Length: 55
Image 1 (spheres, rainbow, N blue to C red):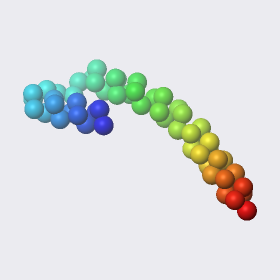
Image 2: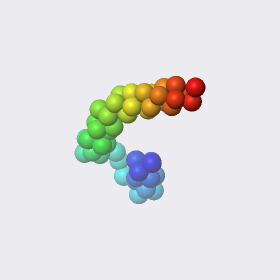
Image 3: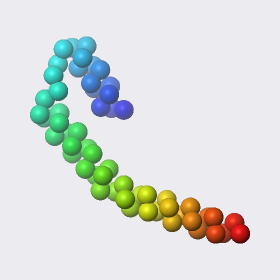
Image 4: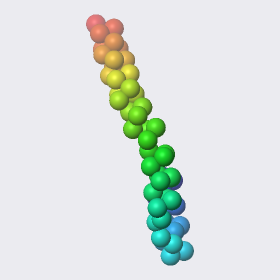
């Protein structure tokens, strides 16, 4: 969401997407990509236990 707002404001000011912007976006995405498998595993296990608990 923040990326899109920043991109829209840059379009209005005719600014370009620089290499610094790329590295900043990359630094923000790395933690998300690292924690995504663990988050999906946690949600999956929790859902399975809730499903078994309802029987």
